[in-house]
Length: 205
Image 1 (cartoon, rainbow, N blue to C red):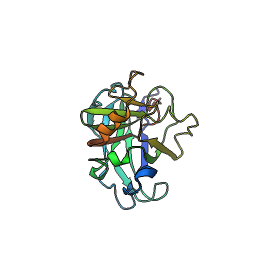
Image 2: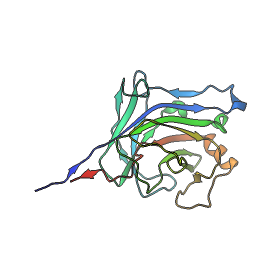
Image 3: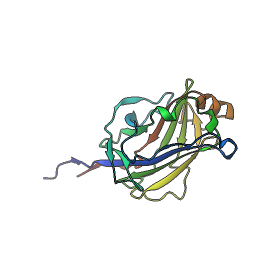
């Protein structure tokens, strides 16, 4: 008789960079390369169905570090065995605080997921600060997205666009303004990058 067993989904993150705009290049870029350790990054497990302000955190998650598994160099990763939750990589203190100088710049990172992508929900960056949450759907914003089981680079604009939402991702009429963006970046308290790119149910028979 066949029995159910978990298929563990692995998510890896490497080379996270906060890049300033060309106009503000005097401000240094903020970088995590994971060459020697996890650099203070952690993992939070979020509810897959609640995209409110702030996102609903269920628990802390498991994070592991690999010195040679990245793209290139080291990487950090997490495991997902539940289709009702999402693992999010949480940035350390050097990415937080007054980040208004990075308005108009880019958040860049490389991500790898062990399962093929399945369309069915947003994959997000979350910027949380001054009582607001900015959500960015980086999956649907890239129509030429390559399979999750290869390393993929994402470059997220740190300025209003059709793929950003303010406080509630479920509505389409709440694209943030420049003032909203600057309010969050001026007191950035949390930066999250979702590692669970796939919407496949992580279970096999």
